[in-house]
Image 1 (tube, rainbow, N blue to C red):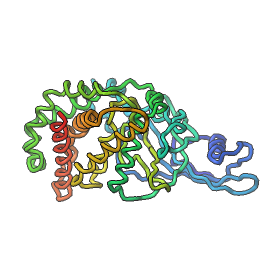
Image 2 (cartoon, helix red, strand yellow; image 1 turned 90 degrees about the vertical axis):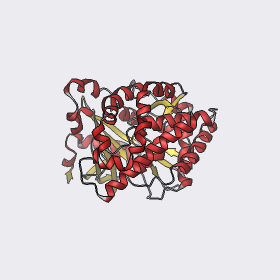
Image 3 (cartoon, rainbow, N blue to C red; image 1 turned 120 degrees about the vertical axis):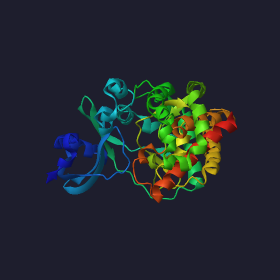
Length: 378
């Protein structure tokens, strides 16, 4: 019996699925017969503008007259014009905005041989298929990797930062950092998200009079205003640092812990590209804090530990960059990509519950830390 209707247009024929199962099991197609298969959605709380769906596909295959269970993870990726959030943009900028998000990159990564060149300690799921759905979407079919739910203590952050440094500095990884073919640099982010959306909101007096903001961010307005006034210079300084490879969203949620306690499986390569040194430290540091999964109490301690480990990782790959320079680049990245947009804009229209106030205070701590880091490194 086969029921993969949950996949909708992301589904493939039984023949194609048979071939992917054979690849998963590392045997010849002719030795595999598909017996049954089902698909079910994967619950996921974090919105992603280029993700159309996630599913588990499970079933049974007949291999030499013996039943073999199989499981695959399927992710549909599309241009972000198909996200419900896209409709909120003014029509006049939609064509430009649609081109800013590199939605094709993840598929290109899984079609590449990047997995064969990752530094020891890092891996990624093996893709058994990347199938175009139409001109603006495709589906990635991946092996299911074993993962463990673990505590991210300071030592785990250090290990992750070291491996991200190796990832950034590894010659083979850097050679593949433009596999997505998407032209992007810091300027695009500044001209798009910051100047079009974030900075106009920061300039609004109504925003700063909102009780949730007045209670937690009021002391930060002059400092954020100064950054906003010099945004082009800040971006130019960051872009002047050495460009290596970057995952682009190296938060703990995208670094899965496997059976080996010090190993990580990297996922979600949508923003993998050439990036300034230290870029991945930002999301490693604050990714879980932004989501409310971790407090901001130890930001400074983790930041210092991760920075040192990242520089050690660069050195392990033969990249010699002074730690002070990496710290400065990291400070500028954290401010541009997180600090300036840390205000909880999405929470301002709701009830100011204790949980919401706590989240606002946490976001203020992130902004404050990013500003202080820039001051310390200037």
